Image (cartoon, rainbow, N blue to C red):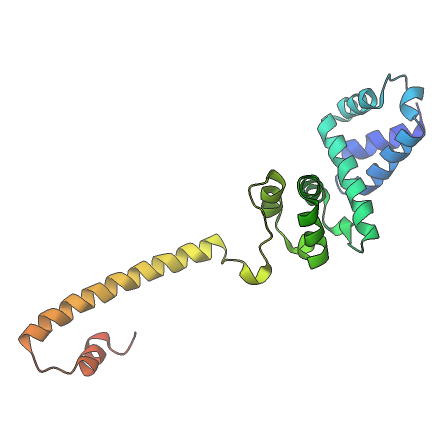
Length: 189
């Protein structure tokens, strides 16, 4: 068995962090047509065979190949693609296939490094058509939910105070609203 194939299998089995090295080894194996030496009828059969032996899916191996190729292309454009990781690179490749202009905008604006995987996935699926800039980003969901809850509590309190004020107004028609509010709120609004 070829030493290159052994390295590929070993990395597939034991290392998720060295996916870029794995991509380079797989590319070398493809270019040298190592799969023929190993007795496989095609490159795809070779991928399926080594994936099974390593206990991963062929899709995982193809994902490494796509991400590696994308990383090489982005590196030429000045992007430190290794920091993006395999999943983000794979999703970016899907975005690029769907909308090249949008993919270019992601790279040129620097948003590719900042964008969340979930948003990139939505772009890849065509569920979103544009990039949400950092300055436009909403609060994280838990903060937004807490703020909404607090707003609802304050609205209830205002409603209760208005009812109380209306009732007191009937009892004291000449009351000063500002001093009245100061008295009942205790200055905490």
